[in-house]
Length: 50
Image (cartoon, rainbow, N blue to C red; front, side, top):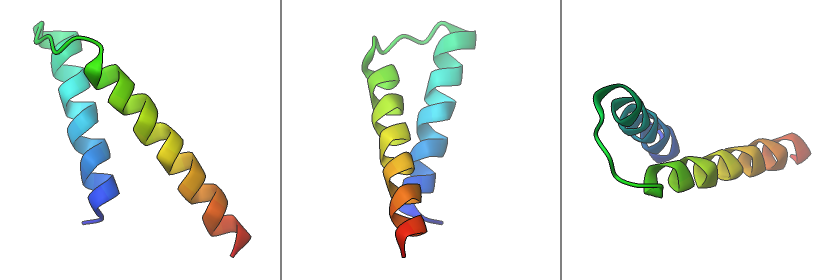
């Protein structure tokens, strides 16, 4: 499994646990999700150029 994909899956699971279960890690998970989304968009754009 691609490390980026694994990171995305873990962050989404942590975010869902926080939303549904009351587990709180502050805004850190949301900041990490935004960073991962930016990295994914950049990776997609770079792959299109090749």
